Length: 168
Image (cartoon, rainbow, N blue to C red; front, side, top):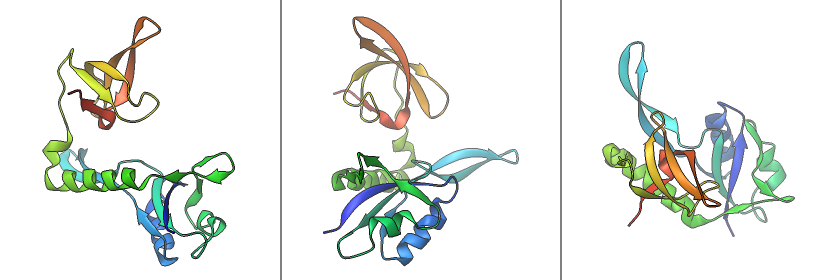
């Protein structure tokens, strides 16, 4: 049965690793989003990885390539593991990421949700996943500062904007 796993790749070698993995019959997903960057003094729309240096792969290690074969692929450093075995990624998560990437291609302005100071938000990923926080201010283009109550004290933390969702 095919399962999803997460690979850590050498910096800048994700596309090479993806090509070599696909040649071995491994399904790959390398989520990218369009961002505006200033290139040679002009604003330009470029694709950037949503998770730099990481590739989601789907394969059946019992019938297809082994973990060792995949890990030894050019450009791949190793699997993301918990303990000795590679950790299986939920298929729902990969599906949601594919939907998010598709949404960003269709309607890029919908991907960047703007929050107001004092607004309650929910953190969807990272070490603070599931925690409610109060939006404080932007911290650059990709991050925001949140106020989180921890041990009866309000602490400011910086979180990636993709991890935030407006609280219902």
